[in-house]
Length: 377
Image (cartoon, rainbow, N blue to C red; front, top):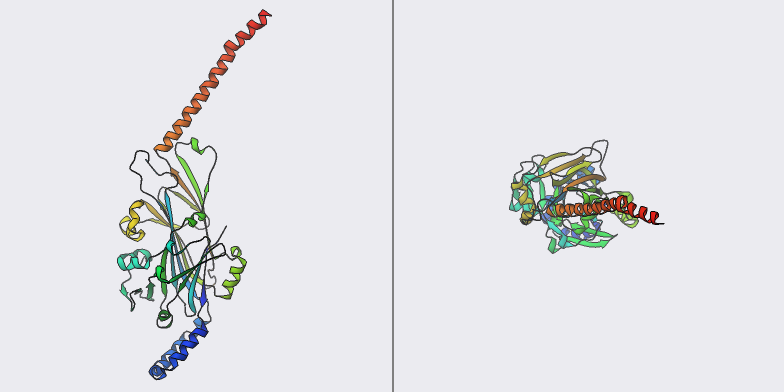
């Protein structure tokens, strides 16, 4: 049993002091800005003593691949579902945050990470689909920034250049730590706007979240059912490596303002969860095919349900961790399954006939032969 983890690294004050010393050389140019900076510091004074705050959006996709067109594949067959995991991280109070740290309880590299921010640039309607709000957007001062004009509080979607050091990876604690470095420009000039990252994880390591249950005799079923137990844990402190736990406490622990966990799977699957029942809805294929990506044609998106669990902090309770325990029952059949079933049925019929003939021989010829032997004696 393992856990994912999200925490942060605080701004290196010594490095910032050196930058400030260089900036002091241009004091004349900054004189007009000092009064505004002091006002900002006073306004943020209360936030400065608070934990950094974050909204977390987690989307686990379990998609069935399209049926093969050959006659041996009439329906879903075992092992043809694809898993990938989308992470959305929205930093609310990020004044002291320099780096975001995400621990994956399996090893991965940059080849397993895909930035999803660029999808909002290519298909702006996806902003409405993902956030369930009709937000107008605009390109920021940098081509990697998208400004989402939320009436309450605008925020920035930042597109990660995974191949060029926007992310760093370190294999440690029987897993991998992914580090996202927040650009200095966003830490200084745009520090009041929430910052949003969204990326996708594709890795064989995700299979550790799905425990497939097996039982004897399933091969005798005409239509079999596979049962999976999905156990997802985030920031479960008692499952941390001891050294990692110490490092996280020394760095900084996020306070979750909201947490959304969504499971996307076939409508034919039976989903049972512990705790509060989720809300659910069917995804629109024409919209979400663009979000899944160019390879969506490999998957059957025509009947995908989204099951949604959500948590929100209150004045009394805060959110620091999450655990989802879900049972998924998948019905599987196909021509190969039918052939297997019929083959076993034929074998059992032959065995039954042989046993019947043996018993019949014992009851007739065997007994008669034994009586003749006794008479001869």
